[in-house]
Length: 396
Ligand SMILES: *[C@@H]1O[C@H](CO)[C@@H](O)[C@H](O)[C@H]1NC(C)=O
Image 1 (cartoon, rainbow, N blue to C red):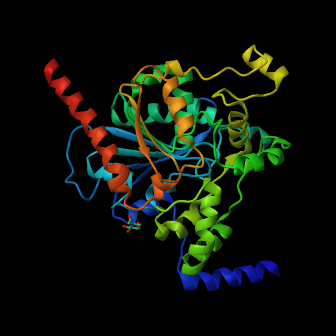
Image 2 (image 1 turned 120 degrees about the vertical axis):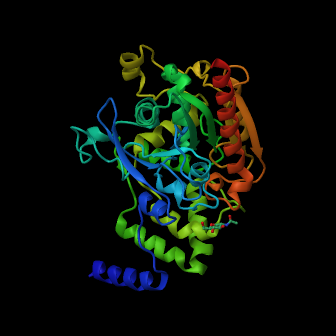
Image 3 (image 1 turned 90 degrees about the vertical axis):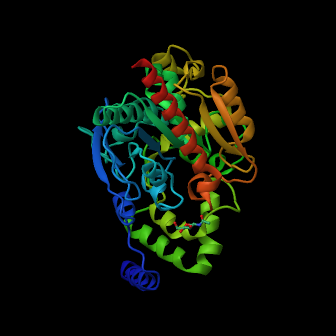
């Protein structure tokens, strides 16, 4: 009975709002950009979906090799996240317009990458991972896959939030990947978290730490459609959807592009393992940037020490300094923590881009994103590419 009632509500609201659920491919195609979907299999058996924008309708197709860019989304998100803002402001499109070969990863466990060669996602074993594995397996696999598909030797990297955490985990634990990263852009970057302003993580803590590692997915296509439809109603969008978005992302902001809320509501909560949250909670409690704490006895067996080791950030040394984009108003990444992260890198390996009143999700959904952030990223990547081609010409 309740189901039938809900279906009627959905129907009515959908008619009012006219929202249909889209996947990343739809969001790209609707702006007449070409899109490809690929799968890559990690060393430990997870089957990942990657979307590719190989070209742009705004650019006459050129022959010859194109530089590649890898985008890694934040926690509970997916590749949708980067493209719902559309081609006028969205970085994947802007980079495609500039002649880049754009790749968007979906990390293990989200709706696009909820697959494994031998383990069912319905089994507990599937969910024994956090952003550590997303860094050392999913991201390395994606980089190697992209390099083999494009004939390039290194990629540009863009990561939001957890996409920064996993990047630093990757380069410190698998330093052989440093030479495979050209420029890197970490937006709302989370690593050291001892000063994290968001209270949400703390609140969640006690509840989730009681449970084993498992799937956390509080959204289904059915509910996505409801949330999304509700957010098309202007009043609800301003009162409800906006504040839910702020609550989840750890703080309010003046910059959020409100037209994106219905699409954000449809795509949010793409699925994670609870261990991803637990690992962050450990970072908040310890003030360290350390590997996962399994408890003293298991740590001893796994790491050979009762406490988990720190990530060796002194190993992080990609082909050019890492660009950090952070703000005084970011509930997930405080300025103090970001500066501690930068100071822990080898000398001059971090470039600072400090904002005053940007919120955590504004780097992806903010107004005039092109002007505030994305033009800089494009220019930094372009400058790297022109230095590279000058150097190559010298060698001939
Ligand atoms: C907000 O997003 C919409 C939809 O992509 C876009 O058309 C508009 O230009 C954006 N507004 C600003 C100020 O960036």
